[in-house]
Image (cartoon, rainbow, N blue to C red):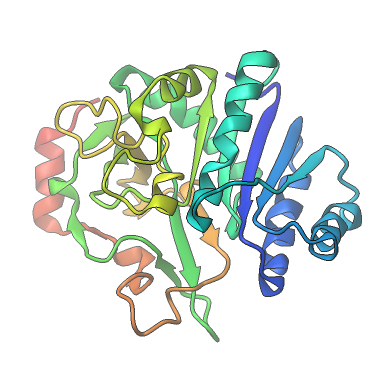
Length: 284
């Protein structure tokens, strides 16, 4: 299904040093050859702060955006949930809105990522699975990519998987967090009717749950979640278009956390035994 209009929501807890991240995220969106509308949700009500955010868009010559400062949040972390009321409103009132994208303010997504999602949506539809992305970071003074959210190597034969053909499969990782979600109207309708549309759902933290979408809703038997990432058996690697850059690189350079320490090429274990296993149990 092609995109007629992509509605994008970005949560931005105001910090001046993070405006550069927001600008990069918005800049990437601006060069996509699609019809879109952007909503930025910020905790700041100060006119000078709002002015700085507006300058991000004016410098990129973007007019189809709104900056919203929700009131009565109750807790600062609930800012990440503020976008849902807009998604619901647009879903119900604007039938031209075909797709919805929620982003944290430092997730840089590209047109290639969007195209990957659209194609993968059809590849996974029959299994009721949802295309997912893998966040990566880059260490200081390096070009090496490290996965943000997966902390241990898992053998490919042990991961739930969906076969598209003999070379192209989707893997279902036990750590499905991606800092974003994308949905078409069918998925958004399911989401808005589900328990996942309330902050109390699932065991993740309140901010993380806002980016979960349908991750843990109606999960097919044998899978850990709905989220799946594309993988090439021939190349023994994650498909590049399923990778999104966590541009703050906040974990890879932090020695106090296990996140962001696993090299991208090491995330999936694939040895001789795995190769034999996949040969005899492949499904396509």
